[in-house]
Image (cartoon, rainbow over all chains, first blue to last red):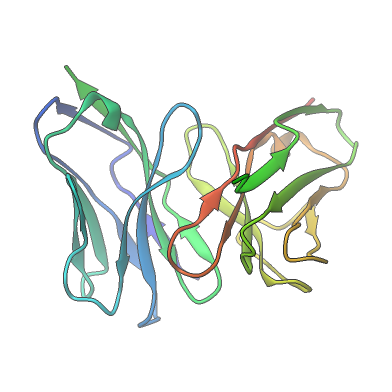
Length: 112
Length: 111
């Protein structure tokens, strides 16, 4: 079964600085998708960024970018110019053909 | 757009009671999922469905049942509620591996 590991339960960053959240996954499949979701205190799950495994180019969405290392099964999220509104739980997710699994999450605190 | 609608938002159950968590989506998505999120933890997959009439177990299916008679609805049934089922439950849907849309969650407490 696929597993998703987020080894950083909590991270902290100063406003306007850059932070990187780590994620590794285990799979024997070659075709899959990876996601980062953000969960603010409202509990709503919000898609941050998405990466297709067949694409070598790292995905970017404004201040958010990923470092996708397929051979190492690593998928880290970099947040640049951190803002107070970035404070939330961040979940890494792996999607295979049929189901989607999540990591345990990283709680990000942004200090003013 | 309503998106994914879950009801109820909160519920307190007594041990041994049963209930159904409702989930409806209006985006004509084939894929639907049920997750539970324990305090401070990630989401664990309970059941999923790839289309009407097709369901399969996820990581933690014990104590739960699902059905998918229509594309829109994917109810989750709890039989004989136990304190270990105290959690926040999320329903999600997606049309493909692009973006999953989540409901607002149901906070369930079993006492």
